Image 1 (cartoon, rainbow, N blue to C red):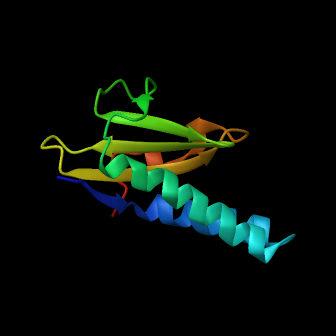
Image 2 (cartoon, rainbow, N blue to C red):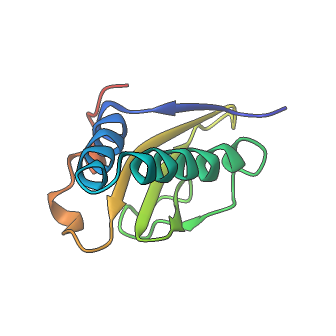
Length: 107
C-alpha cells in the first residue's frame, strides 16, 4: 500500500518561494522545476526509505532525499502510512534557520 504524502505549511511555502524566485527569469522553467520536485516526492509513496537518515534530527524516521540543489526533508509516520514533507531546503541556505525543522510546524 502506498503511503499518503502531506506537505507541511513550511514545505508549501518553500515550493512557492522556489517558484517565485525562478519565475523572475522564466515562468515555464519555474513550473518545470516545481513539477520535477513533486515527482521526486511522489517516489516516496512506494519507497519510504528512498532517502537517507537526516542526521541533524537524530531520528530514523526523519529522512532526506537530495534533488538538484534541494534537500527534501521528510518524516515517516510510525505506522508507515504517512509521509510528511517538512521542508524543501536549498543547499546554499543555512539549515539552522529553517522553520520546517521545528517540532510544531502545522500541516
